[in-house]
Image 1 (cartoon, rainbow, N blue to C red):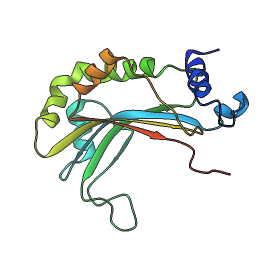
Image 2: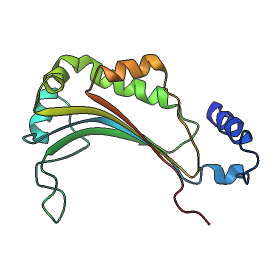
Image 3: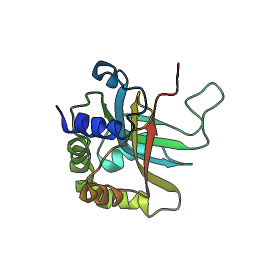
Image 4: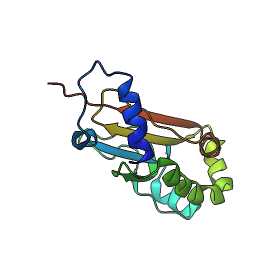
Length: 161
């Protein structure tokens, strides 16, 4: 049994008065998305690609992206995800660190500018009412050095019987 599954089962035992979740249903919805993004009114993803020497996985110029003209800012993002509950988030975040720590000096240009915001975003989605994630504090500290803000979103099951 994986470490994460053990933690979830231990947590669920605290709420034994609730209907138990079968292990086969436990991860019927599980996904973790994470990455680094830079936003700014004048930001152009291709310019950030050239400056950082790293191609974005998601991005748009100001006003692009929707039928209504899009948001009033541009965005550059490098994102990844996984949907296997046996994978370790810390291990995946270490890969992200290995990409961005070597270019910290270039990121500092955006971090220290009033025109841009640099953020680390972590989205954790599953089918549980209550869930938690654990991130090693040393890894979190290193991530925080790469950005202005760290956002962690927990998205639980919103469809109840």
